Length: 249
Image (tube, one colour):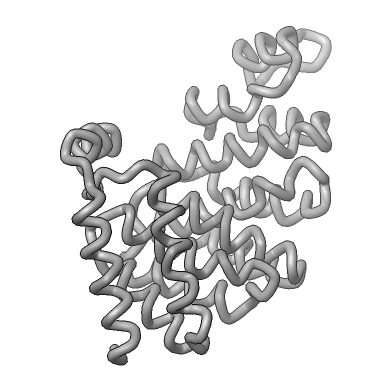
């Protein structure tokens, strides 16, 4: 770690300690089932703190920025990971394959292991990189086969922002067809969330997918997937029997 990177990491941690709130931290730990620790900053305050370091990191080259973010992710505290995410997300228009592969390594190295961090990375970094370069979609499709449940969830959540516009239907169904077989709650909910957004673009195809894979859905995942559908259709899908014919519904 270079001196410049070390200075920023130390300054970020000192600021988080100074601004932390023990009561809020305790509540957040309980909400996240003690999977990850907290200093106790609100989301707006965390964003303000990240923004205050912009002048210091704007001069960093890519290796320095990646080193800084890796060190902030090498922690048990969600706010440090959030600030690392915001540092990289600041490069919104320049996010591309290098950043996606870098984030993939964070998953593989076990530095992302909670839904808050994973979903923030997916929506702020990965989804924006995909917006910049649609050819990156195949990388996220490949993540569906990862043994890492958070990387599998990321393969779903990365497409959530895009799904309602119907631009990646094939890739989305390719991902959902594999991830729906997972018994992991957060992967199931990732599939449900993704299909919910896709139903706004192609409701008929989503309904067909649900029926064809009905036995693989958790009840919670199914409720996520059908949330945006009209009430009558939701009720029919909740009561659906996989062997029944269309005429029997």
